View (cartoon, rainbow, N blue to C red):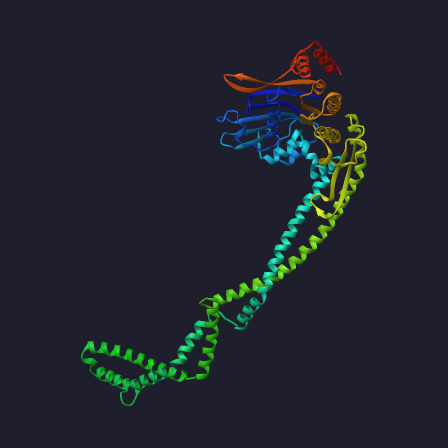
Length: 551
């Protein structure tokens, strides 16, 4: 339950702190004094979004802080999951800075809004005038039925599975499109791969072939040059080797007469050896080199294949062609792997779909089973609220396909008067009837789920007189099991409260501000007397006020 609420710099509130007790607390005040502002401020620590428009003073930050006692609400696991320290007393705090930035805290630990909203939803349920209209909404009606059936966890598990299944379907669709595209490219990829594969490419082959072709292309020219060179070295006409040898002999004969000549002879003899070696190698080369037009043609054809592939793939080497071949192998393998994965995913989807259907049918059975009791309890509560002829029923329709809620859609059917067939709530109920129907629903659900705190913001809209007193009695019974806080303008409801708070406006230095204070017993009598007589106090209004406080 909420123990204390602190508000600073929010709307018309400069600063206030209010303590809350167990049971039923009522809040009254003049129109526009700021009663609903309290609910708006409280909603901040329950995870609702806000902006700088809520700031009373645009130059300083807004702070809202709530203190709760949570020892008996089984929240230990939540705190452990969120890695937060658990304590019997919980503080939720929200800060809105003038620059628009928002910060949220759970026991002084910074958290995000999702965490704050999730925890706040387990602590406080706020019912405002706006939420009455949600009774017309199909999803809200289904949520109420699920709450009553105590299958919220089962439904949430189904919804999580449904979301995952939708993602699977999206993934499968994308993969199938990809597979169609790849299948269209597969023939061409196979053609490219086979073309490279049939070429039997070898690293370094191109350079070797180009060198060999150059040799074969110029073989005749090379052979002629070598032949002429060997003829010059040892032919009959020039015989350079013979001249070289004769020169060595002549110089050797005179070398004994001059040391420098001996040195030259030595050098000439070394050169003569080199020339003889060169001559032998030239003769060997001449014997090795052959003019082979067929080999030349074969190599040219081979290089033509290589050059054509390089041009096609816009590369300059065999190594790059081999890399492309490897990439094509990978792409073709991806296509095969993709086909296997698509088959596996399709099977997974089929199995998950069957599980979803089973879960949806189980949820549907639980809903259908609880509908008679739901209808009976609501009818009884409506009778207590002065509508003995009211008829309430739930139409549950099974859809042809799975939805995020399962296979069911529901419609609340209602009739306030005898002889009028029930119809959809949105089509037949007035504002006062909606208020009483919503109070009946909230009362029943709250008792079943045992929420720590329920706040009603003008649940009494459209009711008065004896019915208002019955509304007050239902609220009082609810407060026997939980903390109930009610903002009201009816004296019959205000008189049922265990604690009474009064919201008022005051002019401080020319600035209108909202404030709140707890009323004493005598002040309660006066406030309720004003509510009874529209501010014109009479002895009769005082007496009525006292009677309302007794009952």
